[in-house]
Image 1 (spheres, helix red, strand yellow):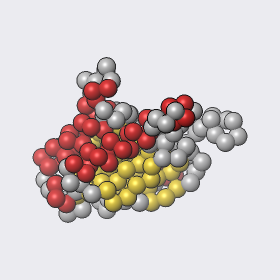
Image 2: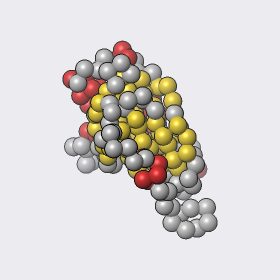
Image 3: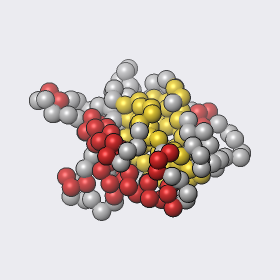
Image 4: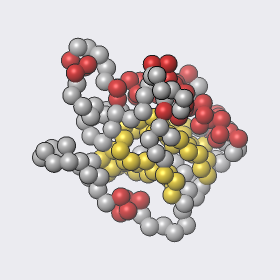
Length: 183
């Protein structure tokens, strides 16, 4: 629901992503990740409590985008898909990026999403929300691998969509209320 009680609708996606004929647009679904090289752009929609993890090597211009649903694989019964979890997807992303020529020492990260989309029932008892846990585990896993986070737009109560330009590492983020920023 939006602030007026209506349903949330993402604004004109085509206007946000542009109409460049030269850049391939790679769509990343929920609980998925993709790796691509410039001039590709990557996008994911509907980041609510989920987290978008962006990795980028500026020299080789290879990037990865994951749409993470849960913080830890061992806490979910249906855990076959390792791309679904913050504690397992980063190794998948790094492995595939390095196979394509990226160098781990140059890779930088950006984090998006992790909003509180539902009533803060757990938070009222002092427990973190799923969005907060997704962000915390993503930060921890990146730090454990020596990957610095250079930009972040996390938390809040609004859904986001993002478009990652692999050529320059920029990420255009738009929320459900049509606010847009570039990181």
